[in-house]
Length: 120
Image (cartoon, one colour):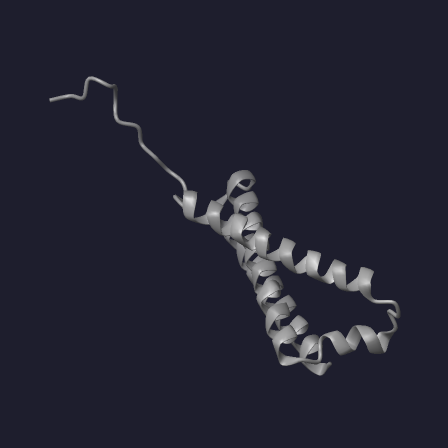
């Protein structure tokens, strides 16, 4: 028996939906808190020399917090770029190539950032 509401609609696409939307909002909140905390540090600090700035990142807890913020930034960027590629690049081969290049770029940024952070 047919539904009185109407014909069934064929749903296509990535089906990421609510989970990815929430993940992007959560990563934005994490980044917002981190940036506000750094902003307060900059405002409160009288001397912003290289030594003062690098001393902020010496404790292990600050390195971990910074790595979490970095992970949030990378995931946030991935969700946004993936959505842009899916929405505006229709040829599948080109879209997959761009997504792969984005993953490589974000992975390289993650490694480079971790190296910089751990050198302090």
